[in-house]
Structure formats: C-alpha cells, structure tokens
Image (cartoon, rainbow, N blue to C red; front, side, top):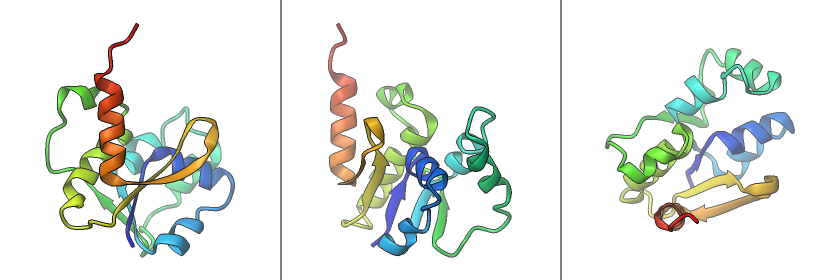
Amino acid sequence: MPVLADTSVLNYLILLDQLALLPTLYGRVIVPTVVLTVELPHPDAPAPVRAWVVQLTVDPPWLERRTPTRQPEADLLLLEAGERDTILLAHNLLRVFRSAHTVHLGRGGRPRAVVACEAVRKVRGTLRQPVG
C-alpha cells in the first residue's frame, strides 16, 4: 500500500535512523518534490537530514517523487510547501489509490497514519475555523 510522506515524518525518521520503517511498512513512499528539494536540504534543517538529502544522488526504489498537478486554493497557501503539496497529492491520488494514507508526525512527534481524505478534511476544516 503506498503512503504519502511529508517533511516531518522524513525528518524525524532520519534523525532516529529509522527511515527504513517506511518502505518496510508501506512498500512505496510518495514524497512531494518540494520536500526533497527545498525543505529537507534547508539550512535550518538538522545536519543529519541535510546530509541524507545531499547523498541522495539516485532515489531508492521505494521513493517516488511527485509534484501536484493542480494549483492550491487560498486556504492551502497558509501551509508550508511540503504540507500543502502533500494535501494536493492526496487529492490527486485519492482517485487512483483509495487506500492511500498520509503519514505525518503530529505535535509532540507522535506518529500517526490517517486516510488521505480524512487528513484533507481535517486540515481544511481547521483552516476555515475563525481565529480568535
């Protein structure tokens, strides 16, 4: 079963030296291109994370880079690029992979997997709630 992974899950699993869990559990891992080209190699990212991306001259067989095919709506522009593109990819892939999951680490670094459409509904619902 393929899984979508954003910056947080890759960051924490690299730091814990447990990145192999993703392909072991899910087989194929789909990652937004912006996560691998902008967010993980960012100067503020931890050194081991930047080092992992730098040595990544060829993607491992389990890793698939994808770029969303549609433009984000205004509410998604409030998110960081990796989160935004993960949600957009979830929308794109939901038609193809009804069983696709989005994996990310929530507040406090607690891992969780949620069905892609549920993640999209939750994030979009949160963004639409009034602040104050």
